Length: 412
Image 1 (cartoon, rainbow, N blue to C red):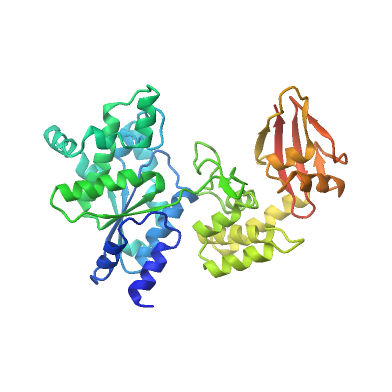
Image 2 (cartoon, one colour; image 1 turned 30 degrees about the horizontal axis):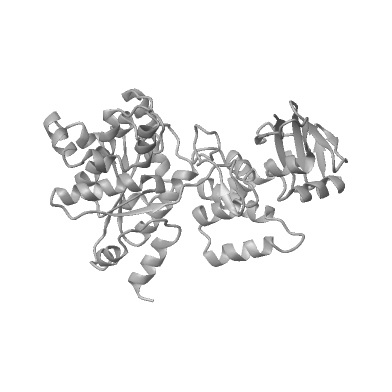
């Protein structure tokens, strides 16, 4: 395998869309550092592991000798990215944006190599655009091409408002690429349209168009596996299903121990520094009869906590976590679930409740856990494997022995 082939193999790991693979090979062969761009709008003050998926890919480019341009979108955050929105984002004030931007660079450098990171604020160039220049940029895009966005199409068809400033957001993001002369722009899969606008704008201005690459969106702590697929909203602070980069070692460790057994492998693939072979070995060991993914989950929690806080802090966090769980107390941070009754029924059978709350892999496994006296509900051992949990009630549920799982479940 040549050096270029090894570089492409590293770049492709965990990537979702690379529409210009031949062009990527060509630019990597030029023997110069590429300018690799990614933008982050500081709508909230903290980065989380969902952002780290993208920053890991940026770090890989740095390890290959390339220059990362980390753009803090202090201007674009005030416009509001319409991506994935069924209504316009509420406007942010300059002060709110600056408060969010203050910690972005510091947190980003926990992942990125400072020596190969150029941090820029897009107000540097976007604040300077005159009305005439903005009109000229807007003239590079047609309404028909803009309406190709799924979120705009859905809003138009359902007669929900679309505001003119929302059409400008992709143009402003694209101009960032022009301003820093990007070779390649990275983003989440939901950013593919915006990334291509940057490519198109650079070409229309006579520049060499940037390449684009997307990475998957990381689901939150409330995700679970349904029919073999990871299902759940993406990680975000607004959904309160996140692990923050700046959170304490203990909070990071305990939150990662809440990840669903089936979902932990996706977290490994998108965030771990372990090789694919190492991850496959862990997964195979967890699939052996009588084993569970809990030890692998612990390994992952240790790795991430060590990455942001060091080995000693990670050991202390794990010890504190184990001490709290050993007491058997129901934790205040236990995940919450709502389980719906079928029509005309007064409750849900216990095995199904445990399944819906991601405490077991199947309803029959839930019944076995009850039979084996491994289920506690509202502080008491639950022994009726065919029991019904009543509609309208909320239950504090603990499943398991040493590797306990917790959930607060409401039947509706």
